[in-house]
Image (cartoon, rainbow, N blue to C red; front, side, top):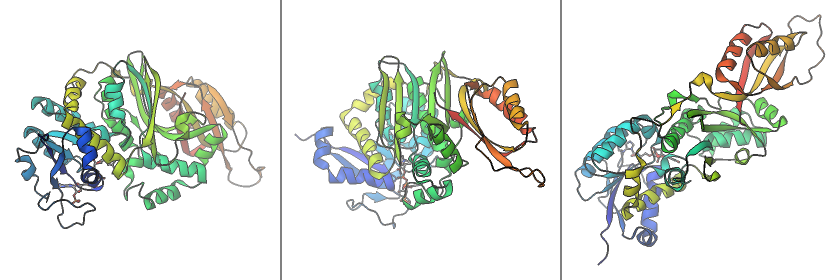
Amino acid sequence: MPAEPLQLAIVGLGNVGTGVAKILTEHPERILQRAGRPIEIRRAVVRDLNKSRDVTLPAGVLTNDIESVIRDPNIHVAVELMGGIHPAREVMLRLLEAGKDIVTANKALLCEHGDEIFECARKHKRTICFEAAVAGGIPIIAAVGQSMAANQIIGIQAILNGTTNYILSEMLLRGQSYGEALQQAQDLGYAEADPTLDVNGTDAGQKLGILAQLAFGVKVKSSEFHVSGIDKLERTDIQHAKDLGYTIKLLARVSLNKGRLEMSVRPTLIRADRPLAQVHGPFNAILLDGDVVGNVWYSGRGAGQLPTASAVTADIIDLAIGRAQLTFAHLDLWRETPPFALAPLNESTSRYFLRLSVEDRPNVLAEVTGVLGRNGISLSTIIQPEAPEVDATAGAIPTVPLIIMTHRTSAGSLAAAERDLDRLASVRSPRMVLAVAD
Ligand SMILES: NC(=O)c1ccc[n+]([C@@H]2O[C@H](COP(=O)([O-])OP(=O)(O)OC[C@H]3O[C@@H](n4cnc5c(N)ncnc54)[C@H](OP(=O)(O)O)[C@@H]3O)[C@@H](O)[C@H]2O)c1
């Protein structure tokens, strides 16, 4: 007797939902073979029934009525691909209460409301799969949640946003300005019309929050650790970093140090010979450090219709087999008592790159290094590119860039030094301060 089909609803038939529908309808034999039973799309929920769709579904499947999914006892799995927080949060809670297992790619929702949603799933004995929520097509949730089970992960360093990685690559490899590279990313579909959440680091912060939950059991919202983006970077920063042997990446990083977690998403100088520095274009990459296995490396497409749909479909197949239900019960996510605490922001340590704009006159170097020294910051490099000869009789004092690399120091010491630099008349705006990876 043929195995009973798994009936599902796709809630949101946009970019990713369409990709999932295509995979399921175009490869039924492959799906049957991998899942052990057919997978049928019983409903696909959208906002606008009149919009043209890039996939053909049987009559009656497309609907704008979420209630028809919630009420239907034959639908066992709902694939939430609406995105955003509202009404996705309310819809997901109702689907769980109605007894549906969930597959989602919604990192924003999991990062901000994971505790409530996972509690609801446990209460109703349901399963939530979210492989596509971090790094799209790269199976990083399975890697951190299952494959590294013998390890305590002690560090994660990752490029988790393809849009910003594309922009930084264009700035480095083709000498484009930030604005030119962003425009090109938008023209090619790598950046949205409103790229704010990508370029200001929020998207990568949400993904890092989910990875930190899986790897360390901590509940961290992106407002609770250092998150900054690439939108203030200038071509000159990319060039100075390159001259020093580094490449700037939007690095998402969490590490376990003496029982405390240091966590950040920020533009970071990475030595150019390191694998992460060589990931260019709209790709993602993740370096995991496990106490047993050592370093493990993943890279690939972190977004886009089919890469993301690939991860969603794998979750659906895992649910059809019954494997996801077993794993979920043991993951124990978003519980109340995290085993590790975040280190206070001021105590986190890093090396830093500083680009200052300073007056080209005697004693300025001594003033700047004096401020850094008084705040306990030791310097590893200081470069003042050669400037044209100053005409002492001309009125305004010209400025020149001053590039400084520090040894490891605390964020608190750096902030104190920045406050002191603000008081120096010889140091002008703007100032660029970037972290440097070890
Ligand atoms: N795109 C990517 O590369 C990617 C990568 C990783 C993760 N994700 C995540 O995947 C999710 C989906 O992204 P996407 O790019 O596919 O989004 P999208 O193209 O904007 O599609 C959203 C879909 O949800 C439907 N929808 C939105 N609000 C609704 C409502 N209130 N009621 C019913 N239907 C509603 C829309 O209906 P209409 O079509 O009628 O407007 C549309 O079909 C998001 O959580 C996103 O963060 C996306």
